[in-house]
Image (cartoon, rainbow, N blue to C red; front, side, top):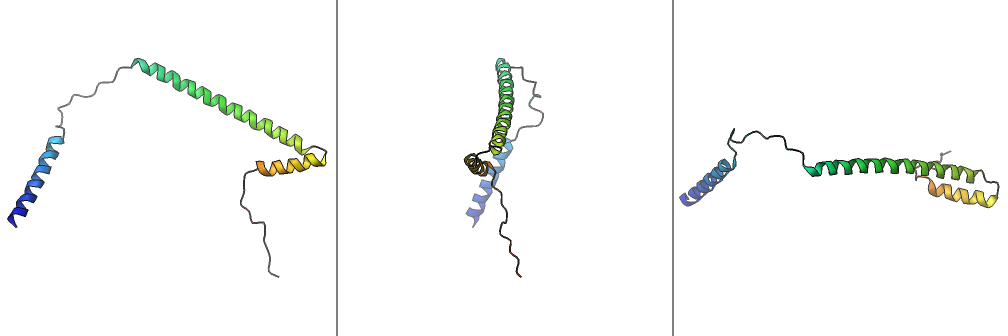
Length: 109
C-alpha cells in the first residue's frame, strides 16, 4: 500500500515540477518589437491586389455572360417555328433550378 502511495506521490510531484519548469516567468521576456517589413511583403501585397482585380474581372465577365444567355433564351422563346419552341421548352426546363413543389393536391369530396 505504501509503495503505491509513494509512486503516486512521485508521479504527481514530477508532473508539478514539469509544469512549473514549462511556465514562462512573468516579466522576463522583453516586449515584442514591431517586425520590420520584409522584402517579400511587397510582392505578396502585389499578388493579392492582382488576384482581387482578376476576381472582379471574372465576376464582371460572368455577369455579361448571364445577360447574353438570358437575351439568347428570350430570343429563342419568341421564335415563330414549332420545332424551335419545342427546343426552347426543353432548354428552359433544363436551365431552371430545381424547385420543390406539390403539384398533386387533391380534395376529398
